[in-house]
Amino acid sequence: MTTYSSKPDPDRIWQDLTTLSSFRDPDSEGWTRRSFTPAYRAGRDYIRMRMKEAGLTVSQDAAANLIGRRPGRDRRLPPIWIGSHTDTVQGGGRFDGTSGVVAALEVARLLKENRHELAHALEVFDYTAEEPTDFGISTVGSKALAGNLSAEMLALQDGTGRTLAAALREYGGDPGTISQTARKRGSVAACLELHIEQGPVLETAGNILGAVSGIVGVRRFRVEVEGRADHAGTAPMALRRDALAGAAEMILALETIAAACGEPESCVGTVGRIRIAPNAANVVAGVAELNAEIRTLNGQLLEELSSRFLSACRQTAARRDLSVQLSTLSHTDPVQINPEILALVRQACEEVTELTQEITSGAGHDSNQLACFAPVGMIFVPSREGRSHCPGEYTDPRSLALGTEALLAAVLAVDGRQAAPGELP
Image (tube, rainbow, N blue to C red; front, side, top):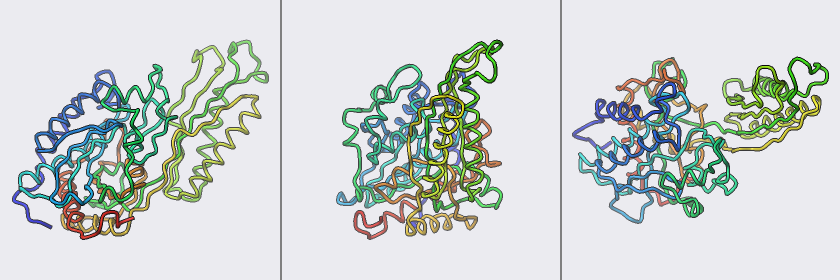
């Protein structure tokens, strides 16, 4: 690794995280900064400013991805990408995604301060809307880069009737040219990301850094159940067409299917959102809408479990005299990290600390999409008590600084490779 006169500054990293956490929805729990909200815009304005201060040329693409670019010596070489996302889930914490953007900024600052010119261009990303949105899909920006953001997805609506295309346009994108955003294989040397683990493995093992070897695939579905709204006091139980009761049975079916999949540590099923109508205490529900998802590292198993769940929904609806509409909101395949990139990332981590291990990711990331056209690598830092997607999410400054140092080492290692553009699969 190149010897630098300065290392990642924990105080500077912490200040960026603290400032970003101040851009939040004041009416929501935690540090909520949902995509396509005023708080999200304010956070991105701050990142834009910090990118410029780091000497980066800032732009946005058609999917509203925020990009800061540092040119390299050899224009023939594809760029190296680093970064993450700054949106959060509802009631989320300060570190998920944001840590990766701040770490990438710190890498750019260190390159500037040490006057180190890479052979490759370096591009720092704040990917648009990585978390599940009110439009029912996630990884919006990286989907566009992978060519997986379809016209049907752009037409999805949130609860106000706004389309995803309109939201992208409001936040600096150009949905009419989304297709031109898609990157070809070989157009990026590597996509690297620092991220909090979001689980307890590193902390339990007493390790500080994790080199990610695989990322789960995710299938997300919308289940729309329609029955009949009736008076809760006068409708006999045997004659009811209760949409909520049917939806509850579907939720339990998903839990049973996932629990019995044979890979309990890497297979999960969740319904995290439900909407019912008329949603009154004394009315049998006439409509219930679920957002369901299944995750596993095993691609074949992901398909099998998805098929079983959808079949269970149809059987439940038929038995209860309900109608059901099933739609796939998104599908993201599992990723096995390229062995050469995994070895490079692990070595970068071990250069920083011997408290390093290989680890798999039970959470999906933009890297699932980016892997469609470029080699990806991820570095995990510990989450206290394994908590994430909640206000109690926490990673200590020392771990963040060491993870940033490892990210820099990985960038330098990729930059030092003599591989031709697109050589890595």
